[in-house]
Length: 323
Ligand SMILES: [Zn+2]
Image (cartoon, rainbow, N blue to C red; front, side, top):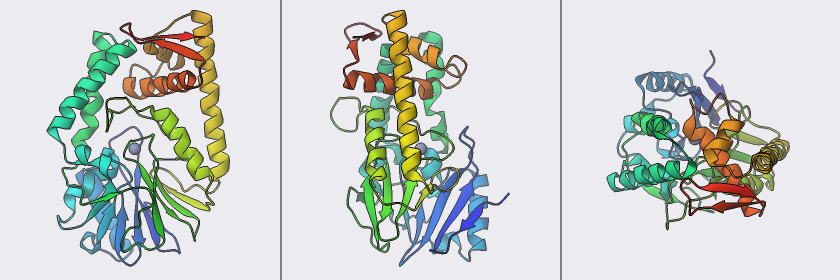
């Protein structure tokens, strides 16, 4: 299996194994003023061996890496940071921090947030137990400090031409790097060719209000669809050459799913998020409770935002009504 793709512009893509359903994850080496690693795979011995091996094929050792930029905090993008020298600068959005440092106070709040949310979405005891496995992937997470915070418009020293775009939705911490002159995007999990990126629900990073992740995600997609892009280097799967068409297709598909949710509400009367999730994903929801609920709640946020539905949040679980 070919795990290395080298491009003539000095970007190399290395595909690394993960223990997750998503399959392999891509990390990128950018040969610039500084040798920069974009994202850092999962923390498994297998991924680390593959990474070192493929690096050797392009003439580097992991000790040659001078800095790392992470696109978001998910374990398949940050785990191997633990294997890199502790003096390498790590760049990323500040919202990565509590996740990658395993901040205890944050995780206490995180656990309570999900428990409250899941109860409000209609989960019973048995499903709550399944949902408790939400944190299992964090076994492959790193324990590392973020040394440099990035925000919209920032440039990264040693990486001329690239600019930071904040692109929340799939993760609150998500950024992409845009090279305007060469029409390139290092896109993380913002847009993936073969699958839709999930607008995962997350605890609020500021204030108390739950971020409406699907709405954020749609506006992040619109933001990059306005750019002139030849290539998107992605966190999973192959590069994307036709971003504008793909974004249009994804937004259309989302709208269709929202219409389906609205039809279900019109047909069946008031429903909980779980009931709607069971109708949308009758086979998958038990296996992937959090993913399918995130997707369903996203559609409900979308419908509420456009005033197609109302939500009674005085009830536990919440009840969603078509207007
Ligand atoms: Zn991700």
